[in-house]
Amino acid sequence: MNIEAKAKDQKIKVSERYNDGDYLQKNQTWHVEDSPWKAEQINKIASRNNLAVENVCEVGCGAGEILKQLSQKPRFDGAKFVGYEVSQDAFELCKERESESVSFKLSDILLEKEVNYDLLLCIDVFEHVDNYMAFLKNIRPKAEYKIFHIPLDLSVNSLLRNRLIYSRNSVGHLHYFTPDTALASLQDCGYEIVDSMYTPSFADLPPKTLKAKMAKLPRQLLYKISPKLMTTLLGGCSLMVLAK
Image (tube, rainbow, N blue to C red; front, side, top):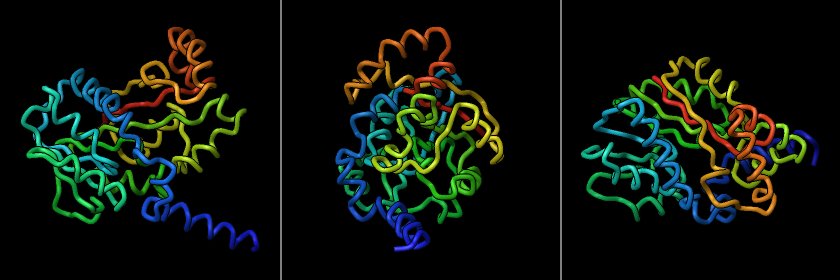
C-alpha cells in the first residue's frame, strides 16, 4: 500500500471509529466515570458568572451522564436539557439516562436550523473533529452562551513521551492545544471569551496509570506556583471556557 492509500485508509478509520465499534471497544464506559467531575466544573464556571439558563444543549454528549448530573444541581433547577450525539453506540447509552428534564437526539445539531439555546456545552469534543474551526464557527449561533472543556494535550512531557499519538489512537484526539492556542482558536472563530479556568484532573480524579500516580506530587507542587507553567511542562489539566 502506497503512502497516499495509507493516509486515505487512516482518515476513513478515524472518521468512522465512533460508529464502527472501535471507540466503544477501547472506551467501554464512554468516560462516564469522569462525568460527575466534569459536571461540577461546568457548575463552577456557571455559578461564578451567575448564569441563569432555561434550556441547555450538549453537542457530542457521549453517554449523556454530564447532562444527567447537571439536571440535579440547584444552579440548573427547572432547566431543560437536550443532548446531541452522532454515534449510535453512545446514543444507546444516552437512552438509559433520559428523564422529564433530559432528552437526547441521535442527530447533528448543525443540521437543525431553527434552534437557539441559552447555553451550549461542548465538553471534550472539538479536538475530535476533522475541521474543528469550521465546526466552532457553525455552532456559535446555536446558543447565546457556550461552555467548552478543552484537553491541553500539548506539553513538554507529552512531546518527550510521544503521548500525542497515544491520545490519537486511544481516544481519537486529532488536534492538540496549549492554553494560549485553545483561547486563540475560539477567538479566531468569532467567540468573545467571558471567563476561563484550569480544571486539574490530575488532582481531582484517581490516577489511571502508575506514571500518572508518580507525577501527581510534582504536578501539585508546580500547580501551586503556576497552573500555566505546570500545564506547559507536565500536562494534566484541561481548560474550561465560558464564551459568547
